[in-house]
Each structure stands twice: as C-alpha cells, then as structure tokens.
Length: 118
Image 1 (cartoon, rainbow, N blue to C red):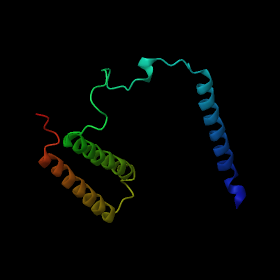
Image 2: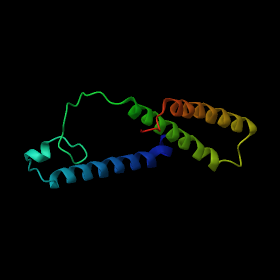
Image 3: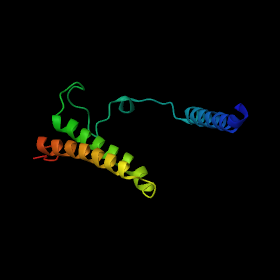
Image 4: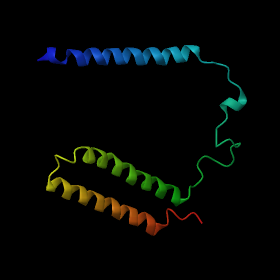
C-alpha cells in the first residue's frame, strides 16, 4: 500500500527542493544595501504620518466583511456550477440556504452603510 504513494512522496520532495532552491537563490542574489528611505514604513507613496495604532473607521472592517462574503460565495459556487449535472435537489436546497445566509450578510452590510462613502 505504501508503494502506491511513492509518486506523491517523490513529487513532494521535488517541490520542496525546488522551492528551497528558488528561495535561497533569490536571497543570495538580492541587493543587501540598506538606506533610510528603504527602511521607512510605506503608506501608499506618502511619508508616514500619525501612529500605527490609530483607530480605523468601522467602514473598513465592513468592507472586509463584504469581501469575505463574496469570496466565500465564489469559492462554493464554482465547484457547485462545475458539477451541476450530478447535483440533486438536496444540494440545490443547501446551496439556496447558503446563498440566503450570504444574502442576509449582504443586507446587513447595506444596512450599516458599508458601500456609502459619503
């Protein structure tokens, strides 16, 4: 039974070896010269202002939740749509339940005004 998995083990060893080779090759070839501007924190091309611990507006978190809602939706809808021929009515009902729960999350986001930036 172990012989059945030997190709997977060989593949994993090759993947680990190539990834370590690429990582260390990049590390060996990189420029190691540091200067003040390179070590400074980066904020969208502007000089940093304020403290890093300042409070964020709640809308940033709501947009992050909105992104997670749509990300989860795509993650589960793509395999569902690929296997559409072999799906049963039970799987359709579960997908409708899932989309309903995500719809509730979307309406919550709209109610809180996550998409209103005025």
